[in-house]
Length: 193
Image (cartoon, rainbow, N blue to C red; front, side):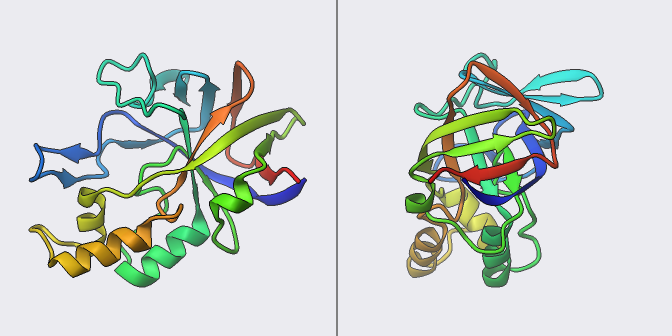
């Protein structure tokens, strides 16, 4: 196994981040909530904060579920956020794209690097398998958020932004191998060989 990095932030979306109706949707980070621990399940994630559980909006059983078929956990990396911040500015903060687990990394990662699978190793030595990584595709509202554009930006600017945010820059989805597990900031993420 090869160390990817330490989990530095856990968060859920208590509701969707896109507001309004297409094609006039906007993007807001107001519904992102940092949590002190996270229960991973096959149906999605549940944030734990001050003894209270809260389902992520992508959990199958959330009342406004935006479940994404194929994965229930999303990963983001600080190196990706650094590249986004370099391109778009300081309003791009860690976690603003809405991933559940943010991992400190020195360099960006690709889908090919994640393809063999991942393992979270908790502080008490428990190993938690994650498999079937997939790219989280960027959307137009998040792209406009990055560009700080209230209206539709020129087509070329939108195309270039969507291309930049693709291929995992915006994050990756994964599937939990186990039935359920609890993770905390400070746990480590590893790549399988």
